[in-house]
Length: 267
Image (tube, rainbow, N blue to C red; front, side):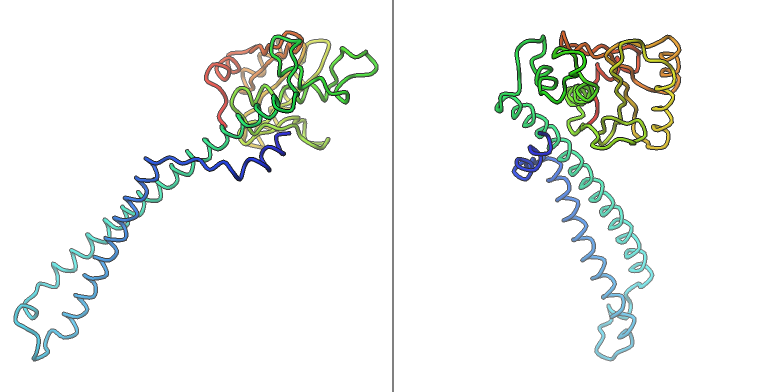
């Protein structure tokens, strides 16, 4: 669904930040003006050096201080470089802001699409949770129609990541992905649909992937965590969450997760 929203609606979403764009345009115009002044000074200096002794050269040209003109060119060049750097910084800030706005709007469009297509139910505390686990392919036939499958748990974790701000979170399409079940531009997550507490081993596995990948690590389970798992997660910077899909709740287990839940994930 998120891919479809991005493909169909994405091209129509073109946010702008007038203030940052205006700031970038001002630096660009100043840079162009300074470049023109620098080139004019360079042309003047070349002309004075080349034709300094020509008979038609007026006295003011012969006596013009070339050294002062050289220093003026150096100053103009320095200011031009500074203005160009400021233009690049302002353009980067505007582009970054626009990307964030676009991701936020895509996230809002995604949630709207869920409601428009009738994928939101009303049997849990958070209706969108029903949408995630209500499709037949997410049920565990061996445990009856009320049991959520491991794949459904992954989709539920992706939903919670989008809800917390990582609007581009998606379930990985392939197995053998190094223990990563959900990814976004800034986060990777492992999901375990266990009936008992998660031990240290899965947390250690995700920690190793995080060190190689560079993105922040999140761990989701439908059960709980052993004390050793929580201790290792705290030491390695892994955020631990418990998903209570029946009641539509996401519970932060350690301080890292609570901070992310309070301040939201970066898109």
